[in-house]
Length: 248
Image 1 (cartoon, rainbow, N blue to C red):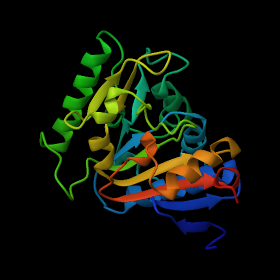
Image 2: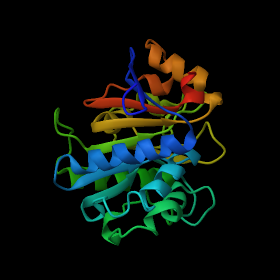
Image 3: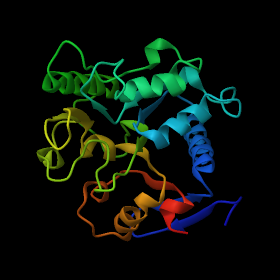
């Protein structure tokens, strides 16, 4: 136990345990602040959808962090998105905008949502892929040169992460950085692929609630074949969980 935070190294990643959901949001915000300031230069962060990240985004835009976070140097991307309009209730972009982007002093040009209007899902994925390659400055990912400084991820009870859904062809994608996912969920989705996620300086899963305890144990034990357990990150892999999810 260090500073009230339990830390444990497992076969797959490092586990950081917070007391409850509120403490998890603060812990994740602290990590994002540290990661956003460690290089001293422009930072790229890929955001996740879901209720657990929402609390973290609100924490970042709140009184404890808003004045300390380097908003002007951070560029915001998305690890996945539902193929719905940006004002749709299920939009990951809308959630992040309401929780953080509209409440913090973020330059509009620093926000890079996945396009979802006026084109097909495949064309939207191709456009986002092209944008990431342009920002990266190379059509190929290079070892030791991260695409993202931080990639935030969630963990589904079925072991999915981003929109890397069990049984879907996207799990075998290795050339595209962004792909459309037509099946496996009620709506089409667009997701970062394994190569893009792996090319992150830090990958952080945010995991909350007892309903995630079994899958978290399975993933961190190593050897699982669920999508969340198949990352091969260049950098650090961290699971930030509350005690209910960590089973402790």
